[in-house]
Image (cartoon, rainbow, N blue to C red; front, side, top):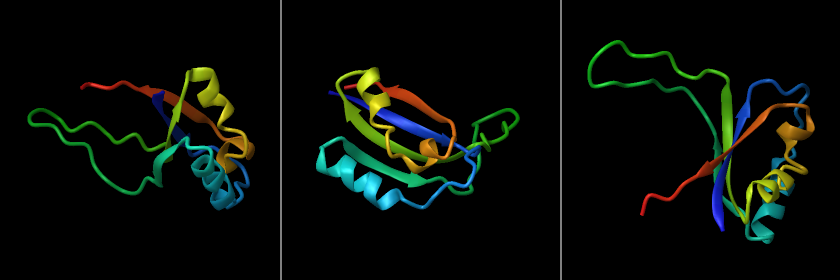
Length: 96
């Protein structure tokens, strides 16, 4: 299985707070690997100008899936996705 991250953008309309049932389903099926809301922070560089933060990200969910299509199917029931919000799906490549 491959790990993927769902990055929630800040564009959902009337997002319901139905995260508990969604995350419980992901746990029960063995796909859930973690997640969190994303709070305040900063960008850091050793030298040069500090770039601005990516302000449009509000949270993430990490899942495991056989492929990108299966990962996308795991968005069913995601409160942010169901409310019309954008969810960016990215593969997390292993660097072992």
